[in-house]
Image (cartoon, rainbow, N blue to C red; front, side):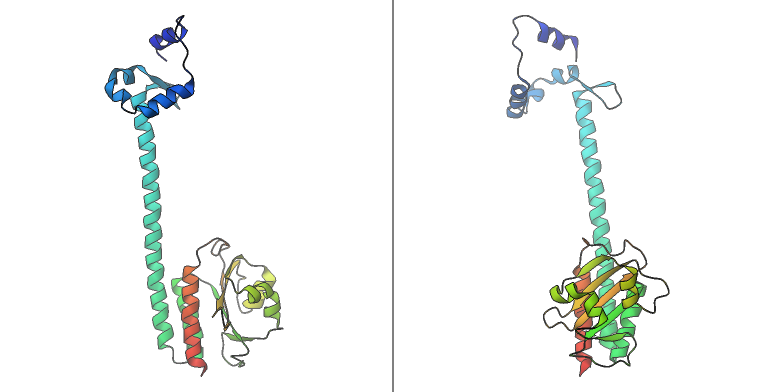
Length: 236
C-alpha cells in the first residue's frame, strides 16, 4: 500500500470505510478506474512471488490465468470430440462386419476381431438367454440358464439389466473368459435387448482403468444394439 493511502487511513477525522461498503461501491461503479486511471498506478497488490505489483499488472495476471484455463478446457473438448469421432468410425466398421457376417459363428468371430483391433478390448463374452438359444457348438456363444453359474454370479445385473463397468474379480473374470491367457482386470457388462433380455455381452480389458463405473456408456449401448440385431437376424 502506498504512503498516501496509509496517511489517509491513519489521519484523524477520516472515517474508516467498511470493506464491504468499498466492494459494493466498486461493483456499482465499474468505470471508476477508467475515470481515475492514476489510481491504478498507485494501488499495489501482493504477488505470489512476494513482490508488490500494480492493480493493472494483477488484472493482466488474472486474465492470463483465465485464458490458459479456457485454452486447456478447449483442448480437452477437442480431444474428446476427436476421440468420439474415432469411436464412431469404429462402430460403423463393426456394423459393416456384423451385416456381412453369414452366420452366428461369423457374428461372434467378427465382433471379437473388431473389438480387439479397433476398441482395444482384450476379451469378449456373448451369453444368450437359453429361451432363445440352446446350442453349444458355436465358439463364442454361450447359452445362459436362469439358474446357471453366470446368471447367479450376475444376479443383480440380470434383474436390473443396467450396464455395469468397473474392476472385475478374478473368479468372475475366469467365469466369463475361461480361455483368457491373462486375467482381465476391468470389464463392462451390457444387456442385449434390455426389455426382452436376449442375453448379455461382457468386455474384458487387462488395463484396470479401461472400464470405470462413471464412464460414458453410449458406445457400449450402440455396440449392444448392433450385436443384438445381428444375432436376432440369424437365430431363425
